[in-house]
Picture (spheres, rainbow, N blue to C red):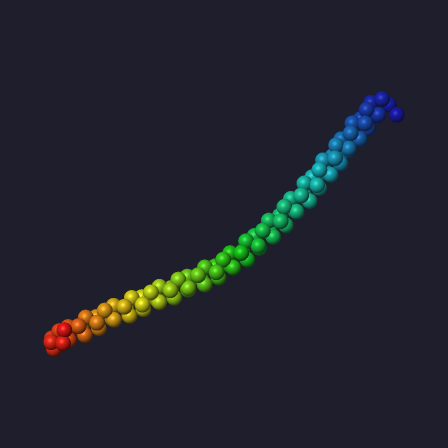
Length: 99
């Protein structure tokens, strides 16, 4: 084999070795990207589930807040009605000379 052919073969061999190393790095990068993608998919699913759960909790909280607000309105109406009734009783008693 001539010296020129031997040099060419060594260069081709180095090139093949470099390509094999690059290929191995690329395969490792692909595996890492796939793992990252799987983790992100898991996170998205988990976030969706948490979001649904939080929405349910917020709707329960808002229902409780509306219920309490209605209770406060009812209490306010009852107190106001009681005050009006007391005033009317006092007025009628004063009209009839009891007070």
